[in-house]
Length: 366
View 1 (cartoon, rainbow, N blue to C red):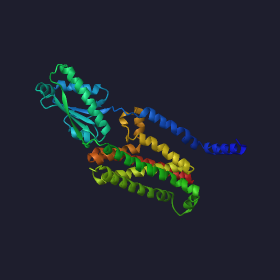
View 2: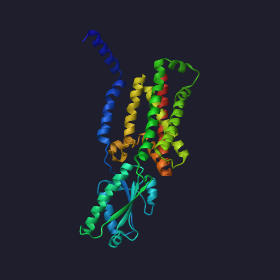
View 3: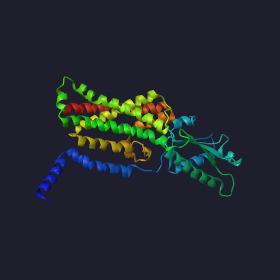
């Protein structure tokens, strides 16, 4: 190899690796991705929140319900006696509800019935199919345990699918992809905005203009907030027109949630742009935030299946709250508790991200 070529390769490597931030992006990001893929993500459906409803003293139904909880797939949903099972599922406090016959499971079985009703939240089609399959195995085993295999009365159940009766995967995936696209566009564009000005040499012109720091920052971020909102409108319309995903909730809920989310992601993108020295670092920094954010958001893999330490990190992910809000508004009609809880989390994140971005922006100018 020629000496000149060797020197050129050495120069490129030195120029790339001399910056600590670039070394972190190049060698830290793969470790983070590998950790999330290897430890956090699982296609197995578990930790399904189940609510069981029966008349007092229904011992057989109690044993069947305990079989669900002992299986390792289901967990007890938090609810008070007498609550409406439909409201529990609409609010997300339960993924499924098992309801005993009015006369009691044992008496119903003796009369040739023994039929329970299983309500399933099908806004997540993967989880809904798993719930039905698990319930079939557990109730079949309970019937054998109670009556043996002699052809005597067995236990049965009817499944009622809520919010997505046709069990179409697009109903579950499209709202998640909408949030993912809005996050991708706003963070990448905003992260590269300030670094592009520095590389083009126009940043000094902006700073020398008769504007305060806050006005400069608003001028750099408001256009991307508007573009992000337009993008949300486009993807919602595309989801409705192309895939038939409905918007069953109020449009003002969708608009307010989208505004809080876009402000948060634009603030995160601005924070990344104040740390990066060039567009290459800004883009890598944006993707370093985006990939864990998408993987831990519940767009593809249930957050409940992740280890507890990763779940804690997932609750710092703005995309998780927006996706939950989108699915609830579009498929369930916008439950009040779910909407305000997720909106409050997004607003808090927006304030924190904007505050850090402004502080870092001032330090950059100084």
